[in-house]
Length: 573
Image 1 (cartoon, rainbow, N blue to C red):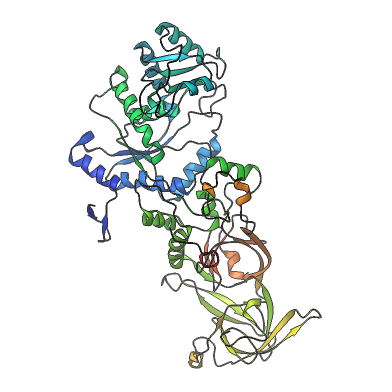
Image 2 (cartoon, rainbow, N blue to C red):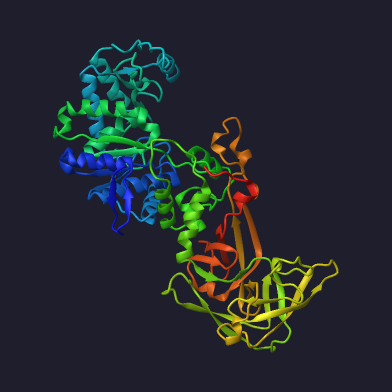
């Protein structure tokens, strides 16, 4: 594998697509021009699989001084909507990329139509009045040739007249299609007279009712690439078997007067899709989750959509880093979601603001601390970033601490709060536990301790060694909060492979827990939604978009360590 020198000075291997592009440049193909496109269909929200394609399409264009356009594949008006167009543009920009131009497949409807007319006139396309089932039966099998349609040799003039009627509204949906006349015995079944136009009587989100006949993907895509000037049409592996047909139509187009310059042609290349454990990527299944209320919308933090990851607290840098880690190959693979989470932790460690939050509170009373006294403690925003600054947190006689951090009768290696044992309260003092109070059910309601006034952080005696450091918030200076603990959406490793099961039955019932009795620092009311946070000793969180200063809401992004893999014995892929 060829090597190149990155801007950082680090040597990095080229992936096979980069090698191919460099080879094309050296050979002078397309006069050294590099142009790519990201071509989503606006029929849903982008997921992390699309993020891999975004990084490839925009990344190679930038790397080799080319351009990448955003082109919406809007050839099926029944499923498409401007809502999806807007969300796709927002997601691309959030990922850190910017297109050169915005195009739509519908921009080329007239040119693609004119090309289809040329094929009919040349005897290379015909109108077939069979239904979809009849056409499918005549296709044959990979080892058995297909049989010709009874309409295959109908007169050109007749096909041309019917094709025009398909677009005037005179023909009903499903009554007829336009097929390319290629080879019904071809071992590649995509060449067995593929359908290239069908009737759809549904308003288009851009063209309205101007068209009734719409091109199929295989017919529109390559021609759109050609008209647009794309040099490298990069897509995922499932389109590899479509590539010969892509090339066939481009070659046919180049033989017509519609082609313009004769020396140019796009090249299709394919890479492996991004598949994640405990995740499904099927748009159909994701749409079902949303429509049936099994998740709270497309941006539910459990969804693998880009907007879902954004709302959960992922950074675009962490997603790009993960995609760079797994790379691009010609082989399908199932990537362990823990690799994505590892990339996320590494990134958030450098950018998340450290704060204190108590999710399962019990009151801690410092019995020898003066009543009414309040001290301001300095808290470093991020020890990994010298420029992150500090904020203040108030300290008083009564605090909230985590219930799990206290144990009345603790084992030997329990280094948190237990009677007779010293611990440090982070950014504050060393305290020694003196006991607790229980209610009539034996539930602990208060924990008691005494502090050493000479051990405030920064004082000489604060260096006294203790084995535990606990976080806390002041009862009088904190704010109530709702905390949403998100986990994997599915309970099995590869839900997409369970073809005999209803994927709804594979959902993890513990994927969301909502805690309403939590407390956080007052400082958090000053921060904006989507801010990256580390709840000290707990995990990484962010502020939800629904959060307000009056009602703070936080989402768990990821824990400080991977505990899921240990609990579920999740093998590395």
